[in-house]
Image 1: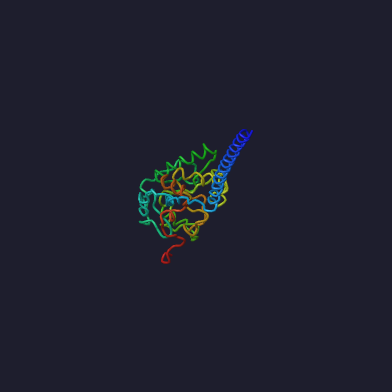
Image 2: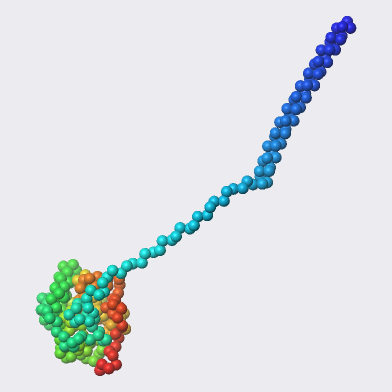
Length: 271
């Protein structure tokens, strides 16, 4: 009996020892797990408290802005003389008389168009007028007529009225170049009158004359430049190169296009 009691006590002791060991192992594992978990939280906390440094990108220079290209003026303003009376670009105004004063164009021809008086012009200008009158008829059903074209020095002297805003002095008239025509409606409505500007004929001429090498020489807003009042009937031949360039650039007078002085008045010594 005593031996049996000792045997049971011995087994009980071993069970207790095993239980204690197991409890210790469990406690140790729990402690280790708790420590790892704490470390994880601590790491997360320190991560939020002390942000990790990020690399600073190397600054790159701003791209250079591309300058806007300036339009290049390729028109040759020296292609024709502005002083030679035989040049289709000759500038005649109150500061630039014809030289010689009694100049007569070398190639005057009669212009085969409807007219009040038989018109004469230089051959090149005459051909352009015929083409323009034909286009007005075919494109718009308009009938144009010449009211005046070439006038000699003596003819200009005969019609000069002393009104320097309306009539040029002899030797200062574009009509003497053989490159100019006063144009109106074949009907005679508003002939040599500013009301021509509001007629179908005047509007068509204003909008289309450049196509044939002509410019409206005395615009309504350029009296201080040209020296003459608005003349919606007065068209000057300059050739299609120049008329097209003036049309495209919006420059309406020869003085401004060629950078010449305005000519509102005759010099004081010209009586």
